[in-house]
Length: 311
Length: 97
Image 1 (cartoon, rainbow over the protein chains, first blue to last red):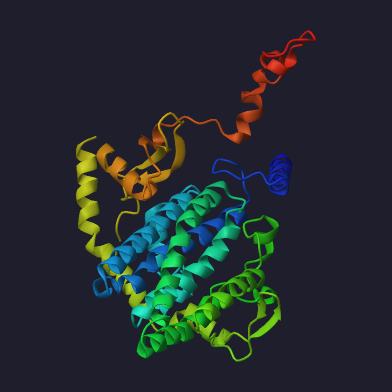
Image 2: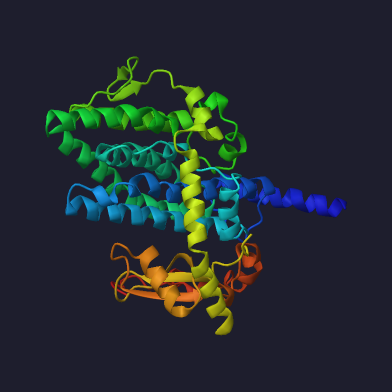
């Protein structure tokens, strides 16, 4: 018994030495259960977010205003599906099957980014989602390229390469609308008004209130704090808004330095309401995913039968 | 409840980005046969001309030596410094070698 315990201590030391020396942890390496469980939760939720995020944008494919914008939107949404698959692949290396992840999502045991529980009401929302939601996601993902788990870090590198197109296409939509008619300008501003705060909430609670930060920082799963990432995002985004004539919907926004801003209070009650299932579209998003998965069941059954037969 | 393992076997994907370069591991896909594996790999890992050529290999067929076994496994090469060109002395005056 004592020998086993000592061995665990040695393994933990070896693991923590690697973390200290910026050596990535790989699937076959020993890792503490808490590290594994944290990653299983985080990577699968990240994967679910990519896939659920296809829904608010998918809502506008058939109503895109031009063939150009329709092709771009299709390509972007296909990328999101691809990102989900990279991430499911990375999560599976931790020893949980893809079907299990999907079951946890359907049973409500796994979450996805709350921001996708808001509706996309008109075409300007497609612009605001690409610019702000993808913009916030990139800020987080750039930081995660240095995460300590190898497969997750590599998926992030691949995703970051692809995401900058997403943000630019969104910003271009907003810019075009701000150069357009009064109605179009109003729509763009309205979309910003509705997406600004949910985008800031994507970084999660303030550092002082963040329940999952402790060991995640120590073990370098998380490389920068929620508040630091949120600051980076607003510092980049506010000048982009001003450039095209959009007004940030925050009466308490302050410029505190050159390209440095401080935002007003975030409505955390709304944040927790949406996380806990009471956002405008929580039920719709999950039901749609379950329905699509069930509709595809016959395909998986046929493929499995074919696979068994051809063995 | 559906079977929880019904996404097909796992395949590892290797992509060669340009002719002449080594194939590099890109990630993995689920697929039920070879044809589906290459098509899924194409759709997932080469949407932006990242690929000049592609390999897919059933994950279960890969034989691996992990980092935990590495120190003893690779030990035989540790003490053979004479395999590196920098081991050798050369007379002064040699300009190129």
